Length: 103
Image (cartoon, one colour):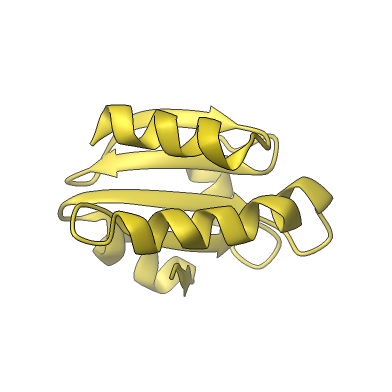
C-alpha cells in the first residue's frame, strides 16, 4: 500500500532506497484509475520498493520542484535521485513491466 505524503515528509521518504512517487489529484480521472494499480505495485514489490503518493493540489511546491506539469506523474527515485519519470495512465501490466525493469 502506498503512503500519502506531505511536503514536510517528502524528502525524508525518498532519501534512502528505491522509491516510487505518484503525483496525483483527487479530481483527475486517470489518477483515480491508476491509484489501485499503484497500491498493487507497492504490495507486490514491497521488499524492493517504497511507494508514496502526493496530492499536487495540497503540496504544489513539491510538484513545482520536480517540474510536474501533467498528472498522473510517477517518479522513481534511487537514494533521493531521480532514476526515471513516467507520465499518464497505462495498463497494470505495462506499468508493472516498466517498474520491474528498473528495480
